[in-house]
Image (tube, rainbow, N blue to C red):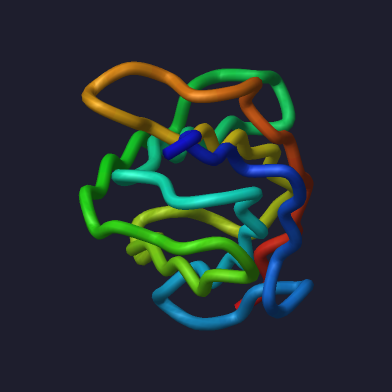
Length: 99
């Protein structure tokens, strides 16, 4: 079967306020996992998370720990993984953290 990729993303809450970051990602088909990268407004990598739960086609809820990050604007990329390799292009997004 054809492997999916992430076709759309959105912060589930924007601005984010708690110790966890919630992102929604829409997949075009089954994916084995994803790689999430978070960047500061100066495009410095602030964090990276990888996960392996199989996701099926449609919207998926993802969450990440961001307790150590200060208030501000951040940019992110989420990329699907299949058989240990990137699947499709990384999908970007922007969010604001306010505590």
